[in-house]
Length: 374
Ligand SMILES: Cc1ncc(COP(=O)(O)O)c(C=O)c1O
Image (cartoon, rainbow, N blue to C red):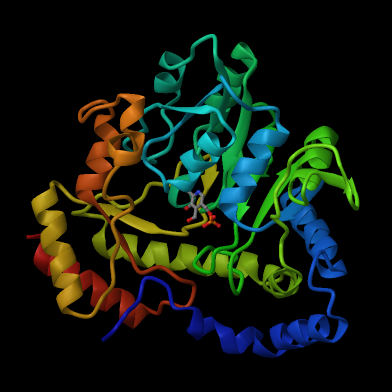
């Protein structure tokens, strides 16, 4: 049996007709750049998340970069984030001319450890950039508390966490990730929970100032065509992608529920012997990824080999934590600085995860894992 990490073909027939109609409508209008579908999708996305504004951009990486800049982060500023994430998180910080400062993560949810964040605050710290890794929200009560005490901005990396929710202790209500800081940043990379047919991203915010600045930044720093108030970028969400995403958005809650069912099946088969993802009681997981942790690297590598030999894809997120990447040597970190992040690189393995993964496939995968984990 061949099983991929995610299989975009399986769910497609269900939405094919609607999606193709939506694409054809754009082709007929030829409104390819910032067409009305972009604004429509921005409104729908903002409404879904419960935020005032949404700004469609070219990718999740650009969403982070533009959100940082629109929030006033720049040269000389320090932004605290996790070393256990995709490099886009720190690329965005560096591209906004700020300096990434790493803080280690929690061993259960793999998200920023608030106590470690506190230790990293200096007079130059301006923002915290929590990553809701794999789709589990970071400890936002504690992070928001730190931000308020130290007058820091929060820019949330929700690339893997669209539809994930957090129940804040202040009001006891559920909030979608991305609505708890000054800006939330999303990716529509095809393998994300809400995937486009190419690249795309979104920023959400309740701040009119951030909204206006982000809208200008994504379009050459311009509010009025050919009049430029700042240096910006060419980073607009493509109209065809917006049309596709508008259709897919209608199904997203169902797909997240299906991902959670797949996760529950994995857990019921593996949860006794292997460390499976936890879901904190004040969190709802979006399960972009399903990440297992083994007792050590030898077992993890043996399981991965066995999965590969049997045609099952798996992935290490991420094999080298960011503080040990060549590109960040200049930041001066060394092995041992962030033991939990290093442990994640050595001992975890992500399994296939998509809404339509069926019982038979999950059982097949789990049997391979159980017989090779020893
Ligand atoms: C945690 C995280 N942040 C940011 C990004 C960047 O998103 P994009 O690929 O759309 O630029 C990704 C995408 O893989 C991601 O996983």
